[in-house]
Length: 401
Ligand code: PMP
Image (cartoon, rainbow, N blue to C red; front, side, top):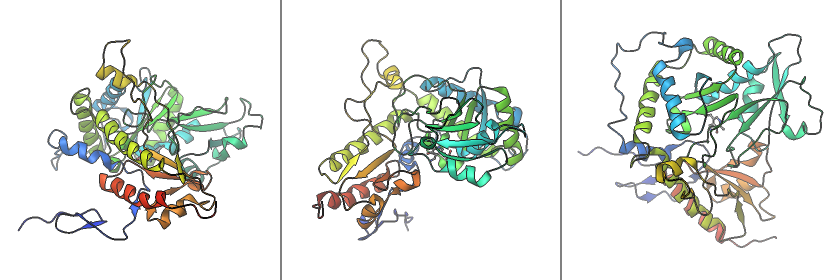
């Protein structure tokens, strides 16, 4: 007989078209499955076959468990997109950028035992891993120092060891961010500084920059990220951490990511441009959600202003002075940072949960509970179900306000 396909968990029936009555829309995680449809179009060119005897060794051809070809292609990718300057800088690989969060904190902390420990900080709302990992791995050299707001009035001198995380565009609200404590060491997390999620302005040229393949190609399960580091000492301490921690990233993952990056570079500017695909998909989702949300007073969305994107400017219209805007109205982003406006919806995450929508509560980002995050980067089914569950919520009348 015909093979039976698996339906998304909320659908059933022979063609998976019947929605289970009370199945919730799950838009909690940032799993970038919207890119699955892209790779289905690149199925043959992106395939990797590895024989049993292949790549068995601990060694790589580059230093510090780096494959030279992969490092080279990462630099080419940044150059092609124009989002970061890598010339004259070192690159390290991590098992996801998640592994590099603590590796960089370690590397930027004082190695001198007589110095006071470094305080790791971030501005609200921030990606919770920074705090969670720092608390988990806390040592004599570093610990979580709280939010930047608590430091703003303290006198932070150059003698104070502070490591500030800056995520730009930010998870969860999508805004461009700058460091706020002038004297600190800064880790710029550029997970979302790619054309699917953000206009590309100038190439970032910071001393410590973090990237993840998870949000570029969508292969979050391959667990691959990298850091671009200016200072040799910081690079060496990061490499030492990675060597003692995991002896580098899986060589199978190197091979797979190299293939994916090669496809992304080869398809750039053409029909199969992944950034164009990603942008188009998210833009369409964003406009639908925006339209629905603005039809009522119950919710509001964090807005992002339209800006020229150098990436699309270059691939769509090479003639200067005649550059189209990346978008002419509202910008898209990875996540919708939703605010509940009604008095009775003080806990926005809970208000949505009652309407069968699983979101990520603002409190997890140390933000007000009136906020919650909706992931727009999951599958089309997940997104369609979100709209369906939102519909009745926006049409309800306020009761108490
Ligand atoms: N940084 C930010 C800002 C993120 O949102 C994420 C994933 N959601 C990561 C880092 C970690 O991603 P990964 O470990 O998959 O590279």
